[in-house]
Image 1: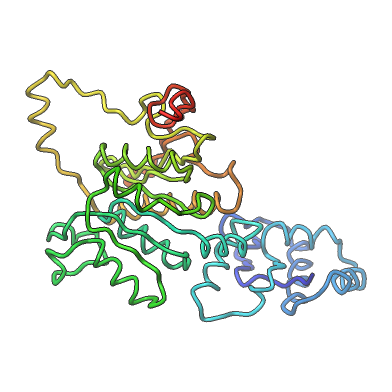
Image 2 (image 1 turned 45 degrees about the vertical axis):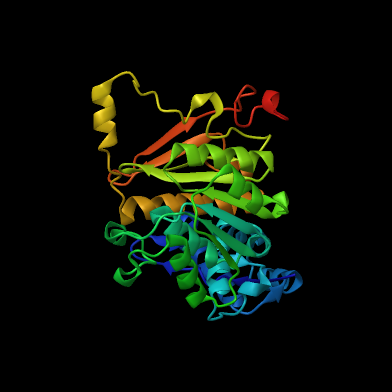
Length: 350
C-alpha cells in the first residue's frame, strides 16, 4: 500500500498555524506545522510505508505525526485519488474520501443500485440529478404530474417549453443529456399499489433503494407499504414550509417507518368545517432553498448507509429537519412499532 498527500490538503499560516480545511482542520504550533509540512511535501509522490518510515527516521520526525495526517484525511491511501482526473467520478471520490473510509466501495454501490423515485417535483428534480451523477445502475421515475409554470421557480430540469409535458419524461430527457448511457425508466402515472408492485417485481432488495418525495399521504403510505413488503430500504424526503425534512430512513424489519407510532399521521379536526376550508386552500411554499437543502440532507444519509456507517445515518429512527432561515436543527425521534399497520411484525403476512 502506498500513501500520498491528498488534493484536499491546505496549509495556512495567518495568523495561526492551521493544517487542513473544513471539519478536518486543526491548529498546531510552529514545530508541528513545519514537521507536518515536511512530511506532506515528501508525500507529494506516492510512497510505501517503508519509505515513509525511513524518511521520518532520517529527519528525526515522529511516526505519530504521519498517523495524525492520515487520520485527518490529509494523506490518502486511495490509489484512485493519486492523480487528478477531469471526471465526475474523481470529484465524487475526492469528496467522499473526506467523509468515509471506503469511498470507492460506495461509488461501486451506487453503480449497482436501482433507485425508485416516487414524485418528480422539486425534490424529484434535485434528487434525480444528485443520484444520476453517481452513475447508478438504473433510475425509475414515477409521477403522473405535468409541468406547470409555477414549477419553474425551483424545478431546475424544466423550461418554459416543457410546460404541459410529463415531469418524469423531461427529467429523463435532461439526465440523458448529461449521460446518454443512463438507464432511466419512466412511469407517467401516479403511484398505485398495482403499478408500484409491478415495478418492484423482480428487483433485488439488496441493490434497490426507494425515494419518496411526493406530498400526498396516500401515495406515501402505498409506497411505504410496498417497499416494506419487498424489504427495500427507502427514505422520505420533503419540507414543512421553511423546514427541510428527511426521514425516517427505513431499513425494513430494522428501523421505524413513516407510520410507526402514527408519527406521520396529521392530527386534524376532521369535524371542523372551518379547518377543512382553510386546509383546502393550502399551497406549498416550494422553493429552490428548501428543496435543495432537503436533497442534500438525503444524499448525506444515503452515502453513509451505502458505506455501512449506520450510526451516521442521522434520520434512522427519526425525522430530521433544518430551518432554511436560521439553520436550526429539529429531530423527532421514533422507534419501531410492532403494531404498525405498515411495517409492524404483527402485521406481516396480512
